[in-house]
Structure formats: C-alpha cells, structure tokens
Image (tube, rainbow, N blue to C red):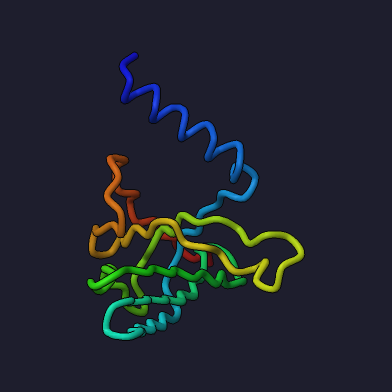
Length: 134
C-alpha cells in the first residue's frame, strides 16, 4: 500500500468515524428545485440549491439543500429540472437542530441526464420502473 492509498484510507476512516451514523441517500423524482445565487462585493459567490424529492414507492417527500461558496468564480451546479430522477448522497441534519429533517447534499447523480455533481467511478444506477398492480 503506497503513501497515497494510506492517506486516502486515513481520511475515509476519519470521515466515517465522524459522520458514519448520519450518511444517507435519497433516490426519486424531483418535485421542486430552487436555486439562489448571491454575490458579495463582486468577490465572494454563494450558491444555495434547495431540492424536494419524492422517493420511489413512498408517499413522503425529502427536502435537501446544497450550499457552495467560492471566491472570484461562480460555483458550478448540474442541470436538474422538475421530473428528473436523481440520487442524492447526503448527511442527515444534526439531532436537535432547526434543520434536522433537511439533508445536507454532498453529491447529486442525475440519472435522467447521466451527470454527476462530483464525478465518482461507481456505475450509474438504472432507472427503476414500477408497474401498478390491478
């Protein structure tokens, strides 16, 4: 195992130790998306995207939020529209806080357009089709 692999394993282990019980994902259809872009003093850019997803086979909805801050450049975000099927990889909110039900987005995989917010090597999930029984 090389130095790079050891360092990667060290960071992965510490991340799992810190956030292991909060890691979650949501797979479903986008009901609503709201994006806000703000600029402070022409230097600091902030992007906030709120996405409401209806998981497949469930009646409830999941609210998730993505925040990105960047100096000088606008933060990037993938094209997500209402009706697209997405896989959201996120952290649950801290228990006892105001937004404990809101997911903090770490990555979004748009299954409809086959795009990722942050590229990962795992295969894209296949779109699941559910048939109604008579």
